[in-house]
Length: 216
Image (cartoon, rainbow, N blue to C red):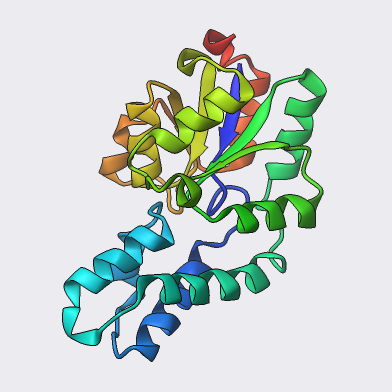
């Protein structure tokens, strides 16, 4: 068994910060979007999101790379101030104790993933970034790359996600997906996941009870 964590919304409650920063950066260019509209793009890379904004607002003369840099710069400052989400430290500690290999597979930039690992001293040395690959969730490549890096077959992997795009990507990679969504019960689009839990602690308890033994 191998466990791949998404980062934003799974390890740290960073999704609200992402939406605020994206909203602030867009506003600088005269684009005003509500948070609920921004939430629809959760799981996508910042580059893909800003590329879409450029297509939607051609009259604004947006420079995608410049906007991405602004978002990543601001997010790096905010990420290091966020605590791990409840139950994450205990579950990662259990996995480490049990010798289960762990990776992070996120759409975020590598420097943001590394900032979270360093800030919380996480025992994770394998991580893949959709931003670096250039293929955003719901494309499965970030999970497939993480599997290659860590030496796992897809059928051995449990992905822990919170977003629809991440869940679609995980299933497209032929991996098991457990969702711990922002709100519970999950929205209908998350019904394709293998498992759904209200909290990380519930997922941890399921693991301790042998619920994921089919991945061994």
